[in-house]
Image (cartoon, rainbow, N blue to C red; front, side, top):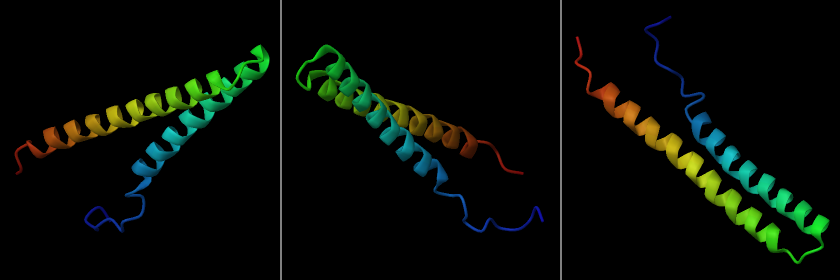
Length: 82
């Protein structure tokens, strides 16, 4: 069983998870800004700030994960083979 090739299922789950985390950050901050705008009775100032802030923080989270993944792949490929 250990010598079998992987069947390809689950190869894209890392990217799907990153996309869901990015979208979740945008939506979460957007709704937080919307709630703050309604509570303070303002124009959509905090809604826009929340959407842009969520996009920025979501992008930073995804970027850091992929950079760490590239570093781990690089260090893994540098190991000597038997």
